[in-house]
Each structure stands twice: as structure tokens, then as C-alpha cells.
Image (cartoon, rainbow, N blue to C red):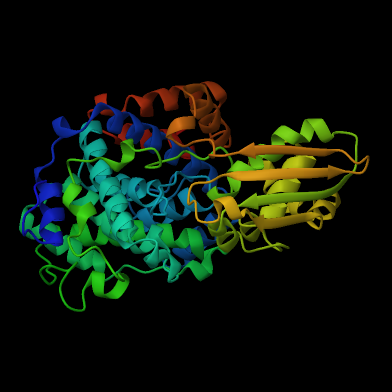
Length: 458
């Protein structure tokens, strides 16, 4: 996009309306499809957890379980709005979903549920789905680069505050809204943007993802029927930037890159998580797993983990009391990895939380800031273990696995998908479904994917 006087809102509207599937770079498409598959997998895993069960119970009490839009991983269906809500919560419930920096946010958990819900209203091909996903992803990333780190540091949870607008943008693309309706869609969504970082480590955090997906669907559907909002919602007085921005680039540089620079192709544009916990802990967990074998049979006296400053401000539960807190506890993440020598879904459970060995090790973990990397937003972790026999073991992981330079292999992506769907599918069926999702661009109708994750259809 050329440097012109075009407004930020107009830049987004133009990007949504003018971008075609043929404009998408091959690498962007490949990563998008991998992210969609990853999100569907973690959504299936999250659908059976306690958080999702509570949302399902609330929807039942509200009389919502009588629609045609499926709740993935259950035998239930509802309306499009509540399907986006439930599926979004499920996608983020285990904190196992993809991540974008410098968002920092989780794009898949609001984009995929929103698009699945809308594709039940407006049948969509795989190519249309990928196009809409990438439009939403890029708006996620560009707004993230423009607003952060100040937006995040002020206490806003970008997965929801930015994700709501991105989900609406993706919905506008999928429904093929004209420019006027698209601008209205963005304006409606901007008034639904919310989400506080203070809720990280509670059930409300995944609710942010579901709320963003639901609000995006609502905005797209309302705009498609002529519902209006104010013009230039991003930059107008008392608009989105006034509410959520602080000391912004006066030229709105990232938004002017829409369609010319694709963040999903960049080094930290998107990462797939290898473990179901906060992304800031994954490098340390990898280091602990590497050291677990070397420390076997010898008591551990102390565990020192050094990271950048941001990790210490996000991983805020030194003594977690719930599984939700445990995913944001560096001591628990390291202790469960060292005790169980794995960091899969079972390692983050109420049983693991009550494990005496895990709790003994939690008390031996010290999380400090490494001064050399204090302000390095992407630095991983240094883990040093002191054993009872006096030995010291150390492992440095500079960049967490899952980022572009350490992208999960196809086998690792498939293994994660099979593990996440094993409550609904046999290993053979899971492999078949993964193969189907990976072929997303060739599908004439994406509903073929959703129907495979409904237990009643098995």
C-alpha cells in the first residue's frame, strides 16, 4: 500500500475488500493452513475440559442449545453467535493455541471459531476461508505492532481487544461485504472490544477469546443487514485509538503495510505451541525436559530460571492453586516437566497440581531476570539445576520451539493433532481428518471438517 493520506480505517476497509486469494503469498497460505489445523485440534481438546463444560451448562440454562451451528467436540448445536463463543473458549481453554508477537496475542482462537460459525451461515470454500483467516490475522498483527507494547502494558488483553476487530474483519471478508458494510462491521466490533490482563490465569482468559469471536460474528452479521456504526472508527475522536492507543506512530505505519508485508511470514509472526502453557514458559519447559534425564535418580536442591522481564510479569503465580493458574506459573511448569518428564495435557491437570513431588520442586524454583536479555522481547530461557551431589546442569534455549526458525515439523503437528482429538477420534480417523484440514484450500465447502468432530456423527 502506498504512502497516502488515506485514513487507517479506510486502509483496513480497502485491504479487506480488495485482497483476493491470488494475492496471498505461498508461505502465508501454508502457515495459515497449519494454524487452522492446530486451532481445530486444540479446540477439540479444550471442548471437554471443565471451563468448556461450564460454558455449555450456561448455554443450556439460557435455552441456546437448539440451533444448527455445531459446538465442536460435543453433540450439541446452537446459534452462530454462541457457537463462536463456545468454540472460541474451547480453543483457548488449555492455552495450547497459536501465538503472535508482538501482539502479543493468540489469533487462531478468535479467527477460526468466528469463521466456522459464519461458514455455517454463508457456505464457504476452503480458499475463501484461508483468505478470510489471513485478512483477520494480518489486521491482528498490524494493530498489535501499532498499539503495543503500551496497549498490553496498560493491562489490555490483546487477544480480545484487538482480536474482536480482527475477527470482524475476517467475517467481512468471508461474507463478501461491500466497503460501506465493511466499515460498519469494523465500527460495530470496535465497540465490543474488551478484555483485561488481570484475568490471565483464570477461566475469564479463554472467555476473552470466545467473546472476541462472538463479537466478530455479531458485527459481520449485523453489518450484512445494514446495521451501521460511525465512520473512521479507528482514528476519530473517542474512537478505538483514543480508547486503546497511547503515543502511536502518527503515520500509522503498520496499517499502511497491509497487503504488501505479511506478518505471518515473519520470524515471530506466528508460533505453534509445543506445550499447553503460557508461551513465555515454553522455552524453559523445553530446557527442563532436556535436563530431566541428566538429573534422574539424584535429588534436586535448586532450580534457577532466567528470562527476560516480560516473562516475569506474565508468569505471575509462584504457588498456583488451580490448573488455570498453573499454566501461568513458571515454578509449576518446570516442576511438572522435571517430575513427569513430559509436558503434555496430562502434565497440566488437577492430579499434577496435587502431586507431592511437583509441589516439593515448586518450592525450589527461583525465577529471575537475566540482565543481558531484560528487554529482549523474544529471548527464551536459561535453566540451571543444582543437584544434591553438587553437580550443576544448565540448558539455554534462546528461542522457543514453534517459532518460524524452529517451526514444528509436519510429524510434530500431526502428533499434536492426534493427541488433542483422541477423546473423539481413533488415531486413524484423526490422521484422516488432519489430512483433510491440511488440504483446506482444495475443499469446496469447509463444513466437511466440522462434521467430523461431532461425536454424534461418529
